Length: 109
Image (cartoon, rainbow, N blue to C red; front, side):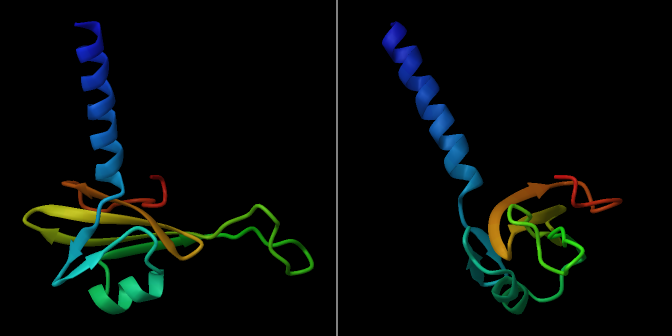
């Protein structure tokens, strides 16, 4: 009995993790983790909201070593839901579907 509960717990965790990394539909195209920001913008068109931050630049104009560029773009509404797409260094990391329209600082994930 304990083994079955443990197995179900692991299965549920795997399903949740896989869902965050799954492809997302953008019109007739699938957008996948790892896609580049420019490719997504070209395929999906103009987002309803977009914000960018970083990387942190030193006084000499060179980015800090561990600093990264973060972008969030939002598409929708599609059936009342918005797709929030998180990019780190121009690479799609995560897609969340939310019912809330983008307001305020959308970079706060």
